[in-house]
Length: 364
Image (cartoon, rainbow, N blue to C red; front, side):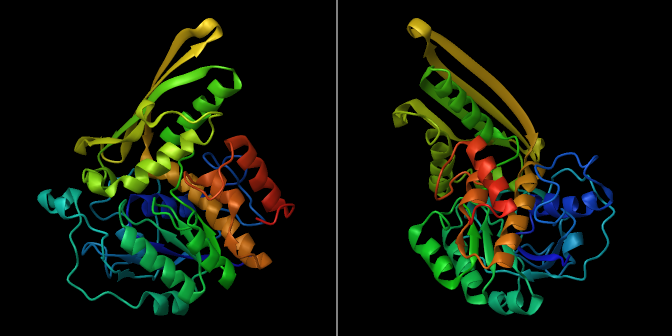
């Protein structure tokens, strides 16, 4: 089968894990392919993905081969596949807009962005000339203006869009209608992890509901040492991120919690954690006879590979939609892989819908 040609906006840790994974699974088969939710999606395997364009603003990445740039600082995720040949695809200078938080200037070079002194490229032209079919957005949290700019570029170039970050594009009816009108698939918003803080919290909240336990109070606090957590020290950039993570949990409860009794969001930046994310989760509830019970949980995961396991499915589902002539929001894979999809389903139902979509039994 032909390769699925993708373009990447933001050659950070998440892009590094995804590209490493594409090469890591080349010599695997279905029996020893650990860490995948789907080995085969409509005939497409993980290695059937090819990066044909990439955009970043850091001078250590711009103009470098993308397979070299994924290992440049400030990237700090685990290297699990380092034997990657040159791709022949150079990282293009993207548009900064609101993508770089000013407070990051106060940190050492190895931990922050160093903006290249170059003019931004014509994104639409590069997308069209590269033959890209699907664009992945890995912009920093809080990049509201930049997210909308690149979404419009996808519309202008006629390229499918996967919005992995918490600016509401797919879940905004106006943007969703634009992609529907042009017959272009879109998946979003805000990527989940395979086993991360949000899906663990959702699963436990759903378990409380199904087992008749009243959830009274809960929090989820996360720490990490990558540029995502450094960027999020600016709390002004977190409105959509907090809403996305909170809604992901609220949506599985039979009765919505009072906002004062639910707190979900990043807490602090700990440089030595690098791409390791630690989640502290607490849930307080009442069971039979109004008797109180509590759960406390500590989760430690390498953040970026955790998201790549979901993105690699979203890319292949986007390709199926392109092959089938389906445009607009892909609700099944969005609900399965995203924290803030247009339609929320419990994770077991979302998984069933994805399997039906892959089999051609469900249009979206």
